[in-house]
Length: 219
Image (cartoon, rainbow, N blue to C red; front, side, top):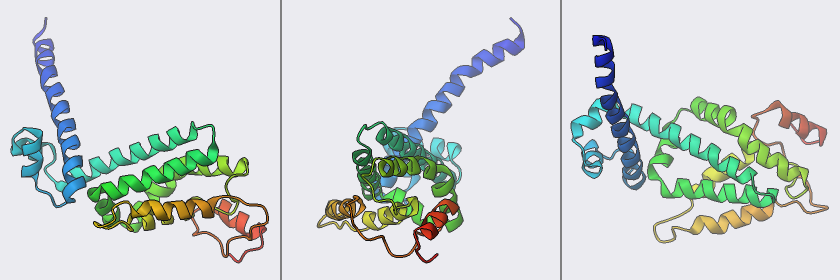
């Protein structure tokens, strides 16, 4: 066994420990930020994780790095939820489940709401349009294809509604968003003879501009 090999094998447990500590910090920080927001201290994260605060600072010397890592995890969770919704044989029920799941996550996670509010508009657009839109679009198009979702709904319509719904709950009525989600769902459902929505959806895709113009709405 060469000296180089000995060093490499000796380092492997350290790398594994480092990976476990990083994931422990992320999991614990997610809980702390969800309860107290992004200003929660590293001391509280370290206390709950059962590690020294210095370990937290070594892994994430800048708070922005920790927030970004957590946000990336949340985006991955949203994608996974959209894929689960797409597996529902009832297209409309799958879409409704996804919308409820998405609002519930934002309502329960103060840190996520603050992170969304702090992101520059261009970053929000990149995350929404480039990373999440293909998955949510698939849910929308599937429900429109089977005739359960009205044809003039776009991804951007749903994104705006989710942001509004997540801000409606209060400490006195933490589940108030469920009432307005139910109202939203009834508005999304296709019914023969219903009039088209006024105006086009917020522009996020040339496909929807084309759809709007073909239906004779002002662009």
